[in-house]
Image (cartoon, rainbow, N blue to C red; front, side, top):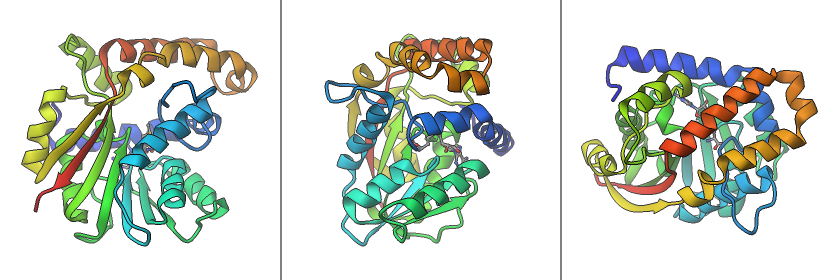
Length: 273
Ligand SMILES: C[S@@+](CC[C@H](N)C(=O)[O-])C[C@H]1O[C@@H](n2cnc3c(N)ncnc32)[C@H](O)[C@@H]1O
């Protein structure tokens, strides 16, 4: 596991560069302002509906009242934050390390039906500009693995109010995932993954307790490669303008490795004190 501040800083710098790339920018456009893997069932028929569906599942887990404040650590271009504010009537502050994503999120927020309820920040989620005990809830939506769980939870603990709930969409290691995959994933995916049985201790050390663990691997990871192939086939022209065939093959290889070694879980934790 990654622990030292220097390693974390280096990881944050690499993550920032990764999310500024053209490929990443096109990806957020194709996925309709949500930048995660998506959830597939009989109600979803394309990637945009699959990403909205996964966001819907996350929103269902958020217990927040209209007018209360929520924080989004690693908010991408703002799609999930906007959908949450629209659904729950709460205020949402999101932070992303990518300047492109920050600008795009601000643009999307202004164009949404809730321009006064969403606010975006450009910065590191490990040291936010937010005051202590400000938020009634928060989430890491496919972002905590880029930050190192322990450090990310420490900052979240600082800004959440006591008893507030934190929702995490994360990709835990499958039992057979070995050290080689873990090393590859850090180098290639800039991601630090943990085993499901590590969450309880991570939460406890950071002042949280585990409330629930919902395994959705069958609807997220199992369809990942096939659905990505279908997406590539329908967006050939757009993708060829921004990516080489080798880069597309490489992305498929990465997804194949991820699907073979990682699950997908929606986890709720509660701040204890
Ligand atoms: C896979 S994307 C998910 C984006 C968004 N949560 C969504 O679901 O649409 C990962 C996000 O984490 C953000 N991120 C990763 N490390 C970060 C850090 N240290 N500080 C702020 N944002 C970070 C990236 O900028 C990116 O927006």
